[in-house]
Length: 397
Image (cartoon, rainbow, N blue to C red; front, side):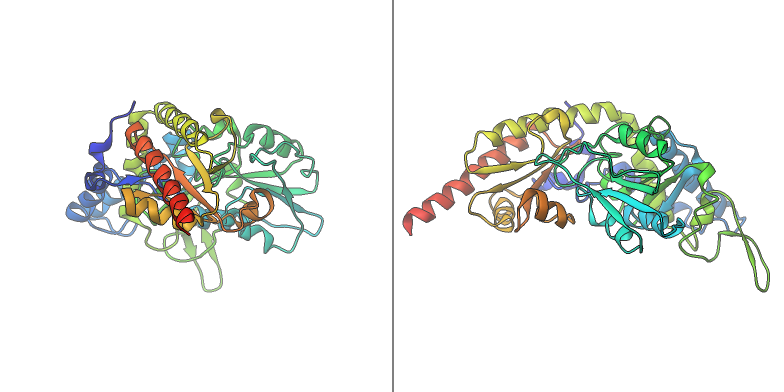
């Protein structure tokens, strides 16, 4: 059992925070690292040679190194962006397509890994899943597939996709693979070299880091074929009247003044997670997820979406209460017991429409390293109160 709640001051307010799939809480060490920058070496990077500017640059690059260690990448393969969405758009806008190409993605995807591809004027093939979110038919990947863009973990169902198998099949067909790691990097050990993915995108705010900062991993040898999304200061080697030469490495993609404090905070978050141990975090979440599913399954009026087997999912559990709007359930959880969950479509409308048939959306409880079994008990007790309140109201009518 992890005991890290003291690192998160917001939990002193007796909140039960079960919305980490949307955004995680931030530990003291991350806030302190950002304040250290603002209070002691607040300067721009890559532009000046005075002491605190050099110190700011060192801290910024050290953050890049920490992220690289977290996912076993080279530091020059780590590009700072605003979020997962921007990272995916860099690849979608950077690749060159021809009329014979196709793109393969899945029905599980967050809109951020769906919309950038369907706007490209070539066929987008959608791998469907079963009622529990599992995908198994990869025949849509063929010799004309340019890229397979796939989530590692569904942000609605918590189901883990067979990412290694997909990457192998894609590479056998000479296709690139982009992995949306927004829901996996914060929760399990990731090794991009072992996975052999070409691109990976993830966000800082879902992994104990600040908002406004994310990461795009691009294999070093592929950076030559992906141009930057925007041009400006800090990314060029030379500029002439009618031409320019781009820098090599991650700097090529980081035009303008970057989110320096946020990058430093994200680097500290990576250190924090590595100190705890990603395997420890994953095991803690597995334990809580198993308990949560067991107890929810005991309640007749609760419909649970996703794998019944807890080993096939992460700490994301989406559900509905029969006869109740998911937004009403979320509001009551907050009002009765300060329990914070997300309700709605979770930026995955096609999945709700075509697979879950949950046309009003779902309620999503998502767990992280600071949650504990006591919170699960209170959550279950509150769900029972909500259902009893609904039943009593129906009887009185």
